[in-house]
Each structure stands twice: as C-alpha cells, then as structure tokens.
Length: 100
Image 1 (spheres, helix red, strand yellow):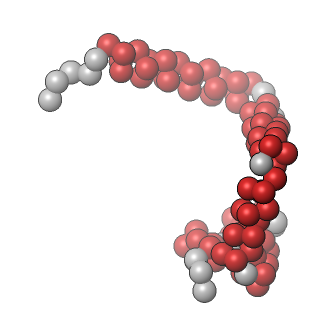
Image 2 (cartoon, helix red, strand yellow; image 1 turned 60 degrees about the vertical axis):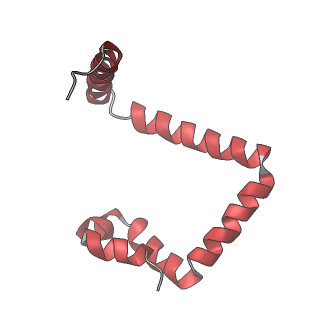
C-alpha cells in the first residue's frame, strides 16, 4: 500500500485542528453549538420548503404513508420525555422505527 498523498495528510490535519477547536468551543460555551445547529437546521428546512413547496408536500405525504399515526404516537411518546427515552433500551426504540 502506498503512503497517503500530501493533500490527504493536510485534510487529516485540518480536520483534527477543526475538531480540537470545536471541542474547545463546546467546553467554553456549551449552549453555542446546539443553538447554531438548531438555527441552521430550521433555516435550511424553511428555505427548502419555500423554494420547493411541492417537495415538502411530497415528503410529508411519504412520511405519513411510511409511519402510520399509531406508530408516530409510539415514537413520540419516549422522544418527548427525556427520562423515558434514556430508560428505554436502544433496540426497543429502533424497533419502533421499523414498519409493523
């Protein structure tokens, strides 16, 4: 196997440097990254719905067919209560996502 190219090595070093900085930011301001992530996610969703409203409707219809109402209620119950979600074994939660 040949050694990695210089570009690959630089990308790896850049990624490690970025991750170290993100960890430092998360340690110093623990509220910042989730807030930025939340804002970015909603901005992306809203802009996508504005630009492609038929896609938003189609994806909503698809999700309604993939996850029936009973299954959605079963998924939301532990998802909305952090203590229930933490107490639930992971395999039970993943089983809720599978089609009945």
